[in-house]
Length: 169
Image (cartoon, rainbow, N blue to C red):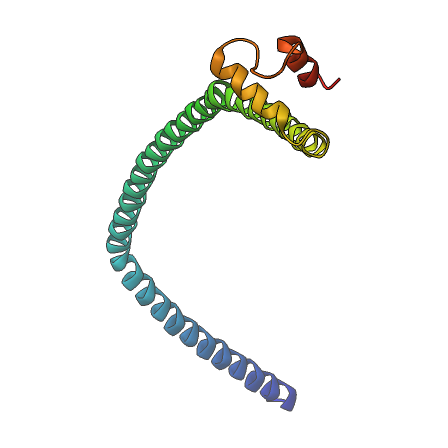
């Protein structure tokens, strides 16, 4: 047999052996893959059951969250109503209490200002009268008030004289 034919037969034989080895390795790997798939498929019902339990728990949580959300919504609505009523009460309180009180405060301040001015005028007049007539008018005014008529010792001045002094003339 010629040398080329022998070399070709050796190459073909080696190729067939190589293909056989590769086929055996492929079959072994396929077998491992099938065994792994069988184990995974055996666990699949348990995995499906676990998924169903997890889904049921998620649904329960969703229902509980919905209830909590509704309760929170009701509480927020009630709080909003309370805030609205509180605001209305505050406005009413301001209308019914604050404004009259501020009017009373204004009146009191006016009275205080008037009284202060009046007292200041009396003090300044008392200083003027005590220097000029040494308090005789004061005694006469007191007697006039006691008698209910014209002051004693005032002579012809009478009530008109007191009014003139009170008016600052």
